[in-house]
Length: 273
Length: 273
DNA sequence: CGCGTTCTTGACTCCTATCAAGGAACGTGG
DNA sequence: CCACGTTCCTTGATAGGAGTCAAGAACGCG
Image 1 (cartoon, each protein chain N blue to C red):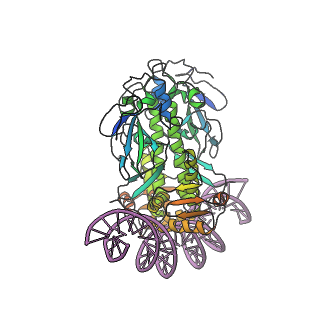
Image 2: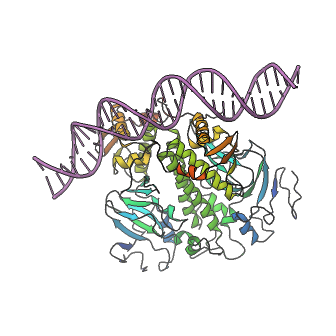
Image 3: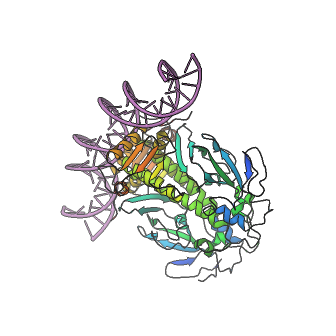
């Protein structure tokens, strides 16, 4: 447990290094960076570890002991779990600047395996960074929690925010799976990818799909063939241009329109009113 | 609607009363009870409010300002939201002893409407109870968070636990919607109800379905007719006995077996291996 | 070039939604 | 007590979206 932090990088083992939040490209979006900043440099807790991952290799594996959250520094990752019957479920894709690992908080072990889709790197953020008292006052008031914009010493807030965001994401996934037909689900997926690419600093119209068709179909809970057909369908419609794993959004409005018209699609079920 | 209860109840308005956690039937399962117990009686924060709800009336409505979590004291509740296109999604049912309201934490407003299925009562637990410093030390160590059994002053832990549990529940919902055929989804639903009835202190084999077939179908994202057919199907198979909203589980093993065999059902998709 | 992996395309089947109608329970008013 | 409308639920017939089976194309790699 070394912790000579800040400017000097310290080797921990062959793979892990004490990260330098000051120089990190993602420091503006990373919740850890802010917390590390106003803490004693020599504090034993709160050491952010940097690690590089080879394509196809796991960052964490399901069942491993929980030891913190992870932030994606570079590259793309997918997470999945395998249920009792051996059925795999891809639970998400992770982009630079995003956080994963919250699934390990409660049980003490991660429930998802997260692996790199290409070469990438992550920072491990110990949970203590969010929960231990900082140098100064560490207590929270509910006002802190309810006004995220407010700049107080509420170390816990980022964690709550991360979890709430995950909750919201899961909920829209439930909605997508339950109430949307295949095409609408697919359009939602593309728009989500696009928005997150933008968030991560990429061109939102120029997607490099880093995952296989199989991954996408599993994630969207559709058959592989259905996904493939949807790619060609939207291509034919002139909404996107696809060539292998490179995708261009040609008609954003058209793509968004797919979310609202029901092309005979799935259930309408109970309308409001 | 009276409120001279326990020792001294204080009137707040026509509906709300300061709850008395000491005498509450649910105090062993309620996260608030423990926290209230070791706090100054006259503290301004942390007042748990008790409220009775008429059938069909909302406890909270989507869009309302977040003002705490709720615990079900008695009765049954359903929560739902209505999306931009006016499609309703029932997001869950809540049993005595369970908590709802976490969906309001991040945005500052609730995203779900929660309404009573029959006459019931709830306690409102202010978030401050989990976040404000108690009389004594209020700081947390990660050890507290990772060892739930440990009896330390970690007020935050219950909140994290509640959120993690919600997260886990949502995830299994995603799995159910994405990877299970209608019958398996239905069996999962019944088993879940049964387990939670037991948790709430009822007979796990004798379910009084407090929600309509429409609610169930919406929740499971199936057509109303499909749900109806499933009731009769399992009835014919001798697995359950249904009469209106009263349901008896006659063959638990048989019900559980439905989870594992694939009767031609939905996708198998990517198997592990 | 052969071979494996990934992706596309086509033909067919089946689960479940949709349409349609009939029953059963409940409340209200006569 | 019975007619009555309303709501909730069941059952049947039909149709369509997406899964499955099967084969072929495109790419990457040794």
